[in-house]
Image (cartoon, rainbow, N blue to C red; front, side, top):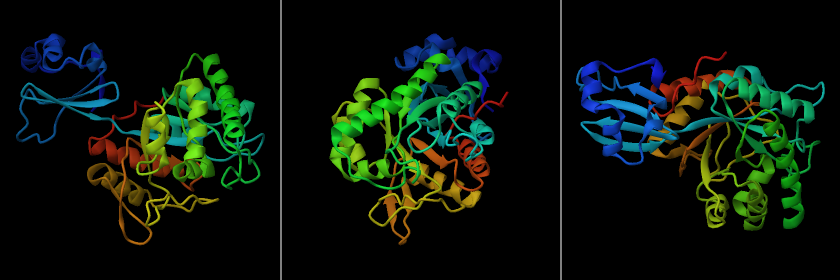
Length: 322
């Protein structure tokens, strides 16, 4: 069970072996007081586990301490595209999904959402201690941003700065920071194969200095880091992959079985693979895992994925929602 550091202490013998946090600093200079923000007693194999075996979370890294040796791996974060209602029209069940995720990609008005829904979604994320990123789109509200269009680099960059800036204003109103940028729908797909589109996204990201969500083995991975932006590698549990590794972006998402989605997530994390529609194994990396809010039953899918990857030890458990 994951507990806040100050609310739980390991048994005295184990605590003495650690010699408090100074000993941790000696083991790995990268691990300081922040390591105790989250601390996990490790029942990895309770029949053989030694008293000095621990897992704890240091920022975005899962740290495993075994016999005074620390190993670190990036913690996987669950994300969801949210705030996609408009006026009196509702899409997605953000209230039920939010407790199962770590970061939210909030629509910025050009494929969905409006000023009221943007503010409400930011406030909901703050309530659940969920980080917020911008989810800008091509200017295509009628097609929900899932239709491609021709648009020049400068115009596209301006379009994105406009949207991200609007969301950043609502974040500042709530005392929150912009966590990341995730292009929406067809824009995401276009940037995966067209370096000009990927560079336009970077032109906007230059303004806001935020990481960008994207996929490995695409122009996302080639362009974003080359432009000085951190790529957060994303994996999808509710969309199919083509045999060439391309994400198949549909106008309307089909239902997905929660257990199947959870299995896909675990395989991506353990093996770095996903099965394509043609039966091929496609390399993937899952620093963050996406569930779309407009996938039917998305709240159930998100919870199933969350619970499974927590059980497997890849993700820190979300606190009980307030």
